[in-house]
Image 1 (cartoon, rainbow, N blue to C red):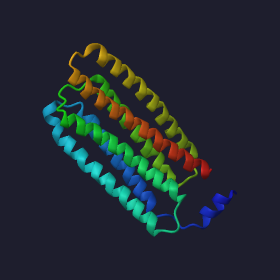
Image 2: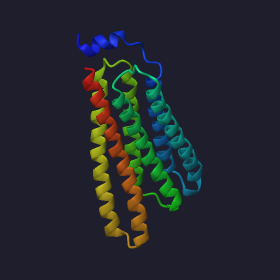
Image 3: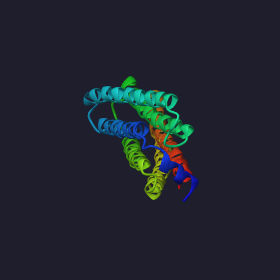
Length: 214
């Protein structure tokens, strides 16, 4: 039995941090799902969903703040304090980017949603769902393979996102003649691609935690 395993045996079951991690990841999936739903609706029906995304992003900020507050209050934590901070912060960063895409589409009054934008929101949703799967496994730190498998899928999705983004930007410069539209669409595509990068960062934190407790 490893030292970590012995230590975990004597540490009381955490009742604060795991629920916060799970709430944060669930909130993230809901946000990503609503964004994907929004880009598949007519423009006049999107605003209600964009407002809901605003609420979910704020909820994520509240969960992050509460988690950091619990860190300052509790001496005993389920794993390294810096890993707790990195995990909750990286999840929040994904939400920030997805919210950023929503805000830009609303601010710039993007009417036509391209296939690439839809595809990137779909990729982000799948990546967020895998984050939720991995986060739920943290309570038991015995099923490491479930965590590493989810992280591997996130990594593949991030590579897929890069390919979709690169092709979309190339097509944009080749086929779009309005400079304003080029700027608008490239910015929306960029923040969606960045969101998937942030998902990979969450996966890196999760993998680091799993390695330390394997």
